[in-house]
Image (cartoon, rainbow, N blue to C red; front, side, top):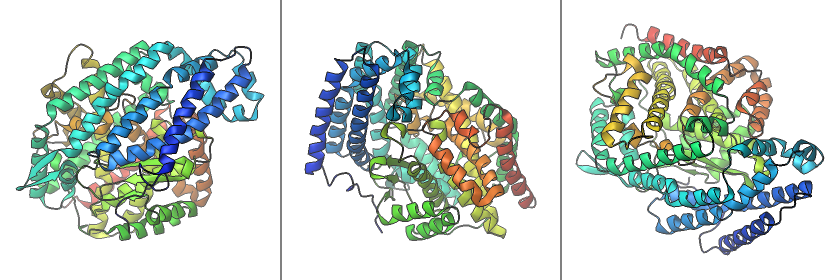
Length: 586
């Protein structure tokens, strides 16, 4: 089986004639955009909007293929100078049409009878939500020249700071036990069954950040300052306000989510304190023990075993899920193993024009790694059910982006737990609880940290020591008494890429949202069985052309009330109670 993904469905290499032809084609389309933006006829609104949509569709497909090919090469090897240079060139091409796109959006936003025009044409009717979102966003747009300049400056501003963060963390050398390993490898040791290994890895990781903390702090400060500035210029009350607007999500929904979580945090503390007691600690759980295995589940899995496990399990859910997973393993959609230069963590990138996805993981053979594969292939399944939408209708917002992925985690881990006994059952249950604790408590702490950074950096530059203190404060609020205050992780801001996007702030609450939204959906699936699947598939399709709240309404769910979130958290509470019962004599 392949160890690395294949990108040949896009191009065979940078010397591929198709790659060169598509780069040239991009230039042609850019020229078309320039000409169209210079000749927008206020008296021919319908014809002009149709022309804009058709041109955008063509450019979207072409740009997606070029961008995915180069960006995936960069993610697989951040030291690849050719890919890095080409990414810069592509970014320049994309920003060349910023002014045109602003003019198009303003033209659409200023169209008074937009609803009437949309209803009068079949193509535009398919883009009703898309066009109405443009009209809604019109009030936050800057002048044509300012939008153009911002997009160009971002290349060497926020985006460049983000690239520096990726480079520094992917190439960071960690001194561990007399040898040099990368950051992903040392962080993976948090799952090692040996307590001494976990603690030494934690200490080695923290020590390594000293080498790059100042540079990363500069990255974070400048990205957040830029985000604050742009949000203010666009007329948003805050960067969070802008993020919620872009997420198609109401503040009431976020408040209901955090409000319900606040109520259940003491239950998570109970779990962590019990785990700490089992491991021999009196003052709460040290950070390096968050993923310490409990019970007997020492088995390491091969990629082939992971494949068979996932395909067999999800074949019981739906045939199209199993078929997609089979293709992912057989057709080299997945880049599996950690290596120097490769980015850490895991992600899934959809390539809708090819009706495929690409998945990056750092697989070491643990059960958690299989869970990660299930998660990322959940994203691929989401892509599967949106890829037949028209090209401009294929993007879903951040909160629902984590729904299908965490739904897959629920299916995988609950099945494994339900079919285990004794020490194995305990190990699987504890794995679920350590994961959901990360998704709830850690994500809550990340949200609090990022909120504090956005506020503090308005009037100050936040040096590493300040950032560490803000992170420690946020972790104490998110985890409560569950963690030992002497062994927290002051550098969590230095290893999470979600903080380092100039165009995407607060990429943390979607994980908590996705975890609890998917738990509620999983409860529906367990109750309804096979009849749930087609409704679920339709909901995934709806995510690209609806608000978060309207997407949930297709399943009869009101996200703005705490009741739904409490119901999902009750499922977690039941698992914690089961864990407490199983471990009462330990």
